[in-house]
Image 1 (cartoon, rainbow, N blue to C red):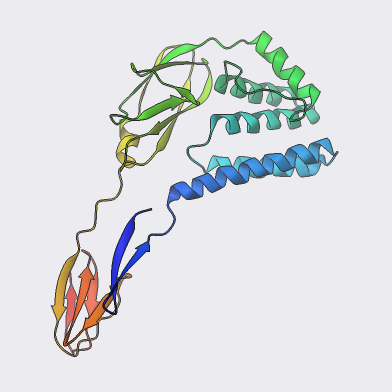
Image 2: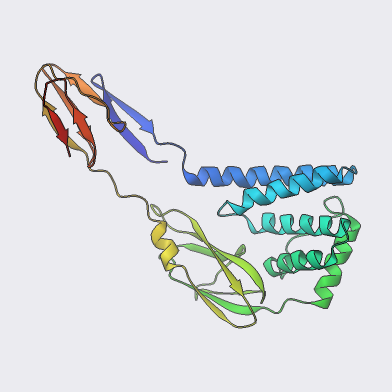
Length: 260
C-alpha cells in the first residue's frame, strides 16, 4: 500500500490508501482454503450436500483470484474429482484428475488418507498409470528483469524454460522487483513446445504514475470545498490546497471556480 501525505488544519498527516487488490486476492485464497477444509470435514462426516456446496463456493473464489498457489488449485480439482466419483460421473472425474495431474506432473502434492477418501487416492493413481504426463518444454519470455518466475509453482531456470505436462491449463507466476506488482498469466498446453510471452501482462503490473501535487493559494476569506477527496488547510489569511490534475476546487467567493 502506498502512503500519501495530507495537509489538514496545519498538521501533516500520513495516511494509507485503501487495501490493494493483492490483499483481496490473498483473502480469496484463504477463504477457498477454509471452504475446502469444511468440504473435507463435511464429506468424512457424511454431509455430502454440504461438501458439494463448499467446493462450489471455493471454486467461485478461485475463479476470480490471481496468484493462486498451485497446490490450492490441485486440491480444488481433487475435491471436485471426489464429488464426481461420489455421484458416479466418471467422465467428469477423469477430466478433473487430468487437470490436477497436469498441474502436478512430478507428484509434489501428497495424497494423504486423512485429507482424501481411499476411492479418490486409488482413482488418481490409476489415472496416472493410464495417462502418464509427458512433459514438454515451456519457455517464458517478456518478464521484467530480476523477476522470480515460476510455472505452476516450479521455478523457471535462467534460460526461461521449465517442463510441464502436455495438456490442460497452467499459470505463469511472476514476482518482479519493486515497484512492479506481482502478476500471473494463464495459458494452455498440448504436446508441442510452447513459448509464453508475458510482456503485456507485465505492462499491466506497473504501478499507477505518481501524483505530482500542485499548490495554489486562494485569497483571504476563501472557503475550500473538498472535491474528489482533496484535503486543504486554512492558514492565516488564505488557504493552501493540494491539487491533482482533473480535480476542481471551489470557493465561497462568487464566480471563483478553479478547474485544473
